Length: 113
Image (cartoon, rainbow, N blue to C red; front, side, top):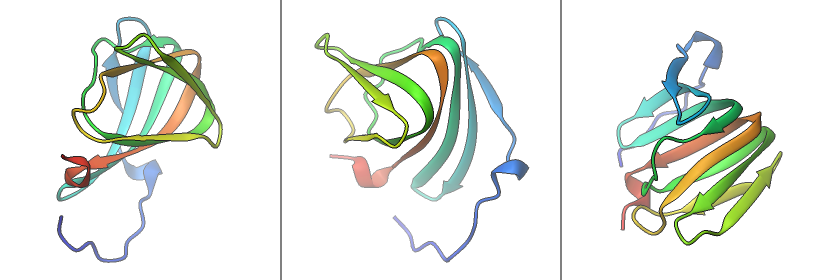
């Protein structure tokens, strides 16, 4: 990780990139700082990720709610102002949102084992 000088992120100036899920759509806006990635992510109604993710994240729910399903079968629902943290390779997980959600997701080299 490198030193990051003080700066702001103007999300209105960052392009939204569309990713189709197994159902629904995710929209990502990405700010990249070396080995640190900061994303504003929105899932549409009925969004289900098209893959199981093993990457570590800090995920903070800004609006709405979603469920993280773990490969163990456990399902964890997060609502506004809740968060989860997981390191790389410690859990396979995928997201589902019935009614849409807006998330702040931070990941990067600091979450590697």
